[in-house]
Image (cartoon, rainbow, N blue to C red):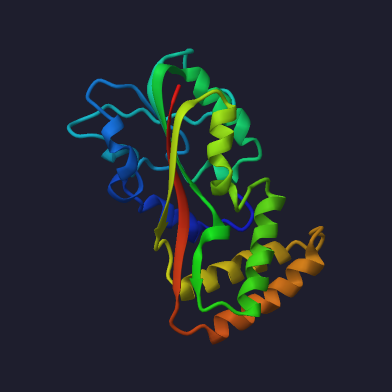
Length: 228
């Protein structure tokens, strides 16, 4: 489990469905297609692809070495994964390999830099900077959504179409609690290389959670389709 990514966060991901997370890609799924859903978790999104019944196989594998033949898939989909991997370009190259010529790619990638968060304060900003540091330390990129289209093009895909969507993934107060808990978990490691910065961020997170009134948090997602 990635640093700063708690079991509660994993549970929230498990509650996501295709209706809300893959609506932009639903027209790509037709009966008889072979679809790869990379980072599917429990498959709550996967099971909502297209219409009618589908056969779903779950495989635990390395995203840089997928166990599928070259040009064997019709569609490749991934939600909330590439921003958490240290080598997204390598993963995109592997998806390019397994897709047939003319196959379609559909990705949804977050960008914390364009999230809508109100109210904001010095404590909120400082706490979030600490959380971003945790993500980067784990090899993740909290701002991946702003560069994913260029990375997809650089990986050899064409007809790249990207748009942003803001979605309420978490209540404002819950976000404050989530960030505080993530920082506290990291600080349990007395030898953490970023301990000084995280300690300061944790103080800000503590103040944020204790003073957080009503607010809004809308995460920014870059939703993208492309052609192999």
